[in-house]
Every structure is written in structure tokens, then in C-alpha cells.
Length: 304
Image (tube, rainbow, N blue to C red; front, top):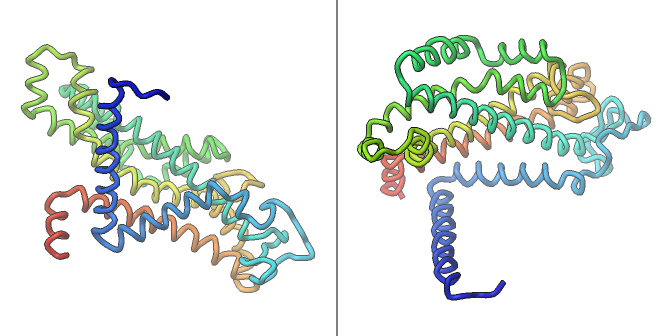
């Protein structure tokens, strides 16, 4: 790429922005040990899911009946299950399933909930009452996991149907949060000024409202990753999740029910994987919420 005088200002402006982002990341990680732990474990989970084909010591679906129910050893670090499959390989590949479901569900719920909540909060009137009272409250009045089980049982097992069931049952929380943020932002001076200058409703929502309500939505999405991983594991444990031979942490726990006493390692390692992933994203979301709150950030700075 040739450098021209016109491109020099853009390159000069890009460097301070990247430096500011790296400085903000260092400040975020320095605020507490929980932020560092959550961020580190989340990155390790993502790397384990991406590089599972190279990290796994064996094919996660390969069966070896002579090696069934072996305890952890140098040959199989996490042991083997009732069909002789390597549990470490299945845990690594299960991370791919859990993170794929979690990211898809969070993106789907966030997009649907953000769109509906923004329209309801900005439009107001009867449309807002219809969305808030009938749709959002109706979905939030049922326990989320029970509603997800009902939709998953109706749609049938499969990774795509699990994602769809969790999106259907999880968008309402994002919609309520987005609606509350829009109700607060749309009365601020810069939105009123844009409206008085003749800006269209779409431009006001896209350029003025959306950037100012994204922070709480992103925080909820980070914590929602933990809920999506736990929900997928629950559905797979009940036989309503991903289909065999795809490895899933919940399905591995279901297989371990009959071997809790003679082969407890079958349940220990998938349970530790679920606990680690859920804890990591919860810690990361809590730390991010504290960092974006100016009062909490000042308190953390004063404590340090």
C-alpha cells in the first residue's frame, strides 16, 4: 500500500485510538483480580474451543470398548467413558458446542430484544403498552428454563433448534432493559435538538439513541453468555439438546448418571467445565459493570 499525504492523517489518528483501547483494557484488568480471572479464563475457553482439533488427544467420537471406564492416567488424562471415548477430547469439543450456542443465543436475543425494546420505548403510547404489558411481561412471568424446555421439546433436539428455543425465551430481558434505557435517553437535550433540527426517527435511533444505550446491553450480554451455557447444558442433560455423536457437557453429565460410584471422573470433568465457563463469564460481566459505573470506578481507584 502506497502512502499518500491524504492517508497520513488517518494513520496518525488510528494509532492513538488503538493505544487508547489498549490502555483502557489494561485499566480494566487492573481494577480487580476478579476481572483478570474472568478475562483470562474466558480467553482460555475461547482458545480451547478454536484449537480443539489440535489440542484433543483423540477423536471425541472414537469408541474403544476394551478401554471403557478407565480412570485418569497418562494415556487418558481425564479417563474414558462407558464407550471408551476420551473424556478430555470430548470436553474440549464440548467447549465448541457450548460457546457456539452461547454466542448465537446472545447475539440473537440481543438483536431481537434491542430492536423491540428500542421501538417500544421510543414510540410510547399504545404500542409501548402492548409490547411491555403483553409480550415482555408474558415471557418474563414464566421461569426461563421451563419455557426453554417446553419450546425445545416442541421443536425437537438439535443444535439449531436449541438456539432457536433459547432465543425465543431469552429476548424479553434484553427488550425490557433496552426500553428502560430509551425512555431515559430520548428526553435528553441532544435527542430533542436532533428532533428539532428535522432528523428522521431512524437517524435519531441509529445515531443518537443506540450508542448511548449499548453499555448496559453489552454487560447483560456478557452475563447472558453464562446463562446460555448453563441452559444448553441443562437441555442436553435432559436429552433435548444437541444430538449424538456431537459432544456436549450436559449430555456427558447425563451419560455419567449411571456411573457416579464406579467411574466418578465421568461426571467430575464435564461439571468442572460447566462451572468454570459460567463462573468466568459471570465474573467478567460483574467486573465490566463495575468498570463502566463511574461511582464504582472512583471507589476502586480510591481503594488502590
